[in-house]
Length: 333
Image (cartoon, rainbow, N blue to C red; front, top):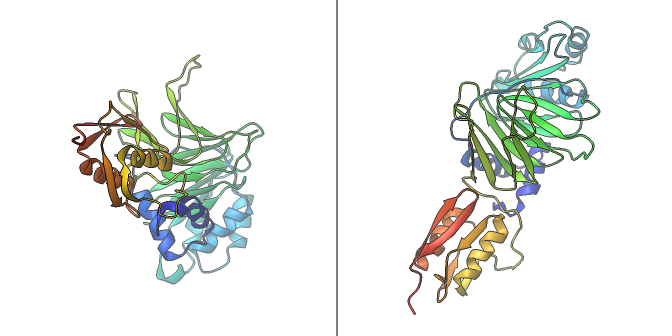
């Protein structure tokens, strides 16, 4: 399995149609691109249509739960915890119920989903957006999205594949940050008690900005593109831009040979990496003037590809924010 089908695999994974091998690849990618130190989520009011309700309960219990849902919906104004009732039913394949679905109190007008399992849980929201909710995380959303925006509140970590709607921005609200998009895929990690919040982008563009109770003409924030991340320190309130640990392909290589090089100018090899992963690679001076590279870099993570080229042509790289800078002695004449 290679990263060249990343977007298609994400869609299959969220739809529950991926093979065990494909699910393993996607989950490995998420593991290799964690947010250094983070925990849980916030809450508001978003949509959980019949699709998510039926799917959640079908995946966590053996018996149909329609009657319980009807009762739960009728009592939504109270703090009825449907999950408490579901636990009275036999678990599926010997496993225990790993997702809580609660009707929130009257003033919150929505639902809360908790993942208490050890595996990611897939959710489909009312607008068609899909969520992979990580263990020990919870998400809150309203019964129906508003006419101007779609807001969910997250405590913990989740991967979002947002249905595009230019009339309704999709906003993930956490303790200190808001992540706003029209339609894209990204990962947010914001656990209660952790010192930082991290947002990573898989596809599209994401606006990440600090939230405040007071209106301001300027906000602390950035626009992120694929393979970029931002880490927000809760104490210093500073944001640091960076590159995800294991960048995914954003533009597949067109050549049949892909990453096979034979006496190729090193500058061209670096240019291919830059184009494939959407990451700026800046070569300082003319250090690559006489450098040629030969090698097969297929099926290797980006940073391993970068390391091998650098070692072969006697240069080093340095990461500065979301860019990579190439420097060193280069090749002899």
